[in-house]
Length: 382
Ligand code: GLY
Image (cartoon, rainbow, N blue to C red; front, side, top):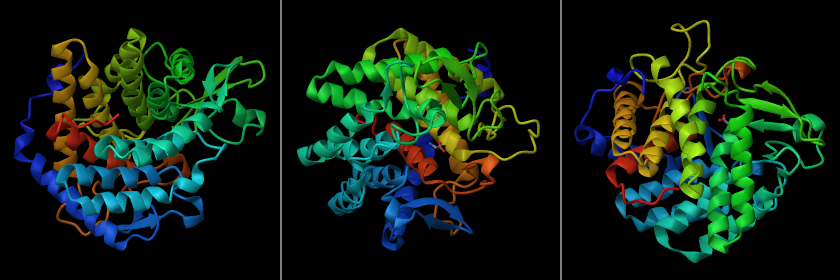
């Protein structure tokens, strides 16, 4: 691994409890004030999603934060709040036009089931896994990211890195109901991502376009990155985390290797404070915006990878790097000592859409997930 010297061992015990306590207190405060799902902050306040969207793609992250707050405190009132908010996702169950059902129901329901053992939380997630599996295009061997199954060829033929995070719902469901079809679909999608998104230099394209009727690959593309040939930092972080999930579920060494390759690209390209710029290829670096959410996803992804790593030295390295990123997030990017509603500052939702310098609910969720993975490694997340 390159650039190991960037990573110096930091003992998180000095700030881990403070960061968790701060996160729980702010989550409780948000709980008292939110009427719909939080998405991003502007002027320090949450912009909440349209209630008719029933959580859009981010509702699971808010519910997941509530489940993690319960895991940290044992406060049963937080499970009641998590269930209440999870129930607001239920209208999404039959939805056939978005791959992000994985984010919504894994964090909204499976995580709650794993923490509480309540079987009632399982059924909605199992149903949604079957809906998600219908998005699989057997000709191209990929899960369609956006749009209905009879949408335009452009939508039907599009894959994005983000889908790597939605595969774990399929792996989980396949195991629960002992149906190998789910695992086959998720593995096939991950292999397609490996083949077409991952470049020889270990960077990834955010999107790829395929002919949905023949399955033929057309081109690499982007939606939130700088260009079709650039590497969008959040997408690369989704990949580190998602390929580790795939390795846990299948034992296929190609997935472990993919996660390693993505990190190998990222690590030498991080600035000294370890928080990535929004796109690794921006010509404006170092005078461009960061994405703190890419950093927290990467930290959680490194800890996820460490938990499945075969080589104990590598597992220590991934943990060490995650701790260093979290240290920087806590000290330099958290909202402690401010009145901001989010836990983290300076997230980039999408620079091409002119949405920068926000708190982002998914940045907050993965920050707390990573803190909890350090504080309670016995906790089942994923
Ligand atoms: N899944 C959308 C994003 O990462 O912004």
